[in-house]
Image 1 (cartoon, rainbow, N blue to C red):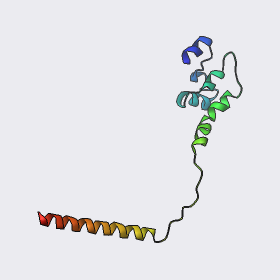
Image 2: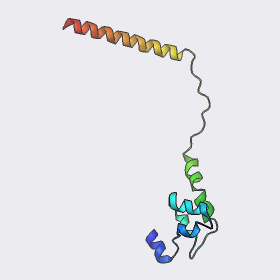
Image 3: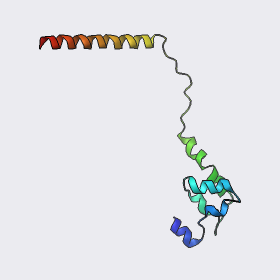
Image 4: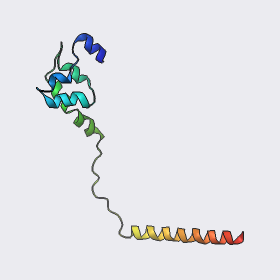
Length: 104
């Protein structure tokens, strides 16, 4: 797209915007490239191109956010039950190892 923009004459240079619009120069240099940058100058300029470029992060992040499920309530004895199950499994495994090694 940059090659075509060079031919048409609508490829923006961040150096042109450093002193007049530093936020836009930063966005042109370090943020993802979008088709809006080619509407900043050239044949078919668009007045909303600057706003679209600066708010591109919001339009990318908003659809990817999940809803807030709220507080997940956990049973008060859930941790105690899980630790008891883990302890029983560990004791059985250790006893099995001792019995198995004593038979060899």
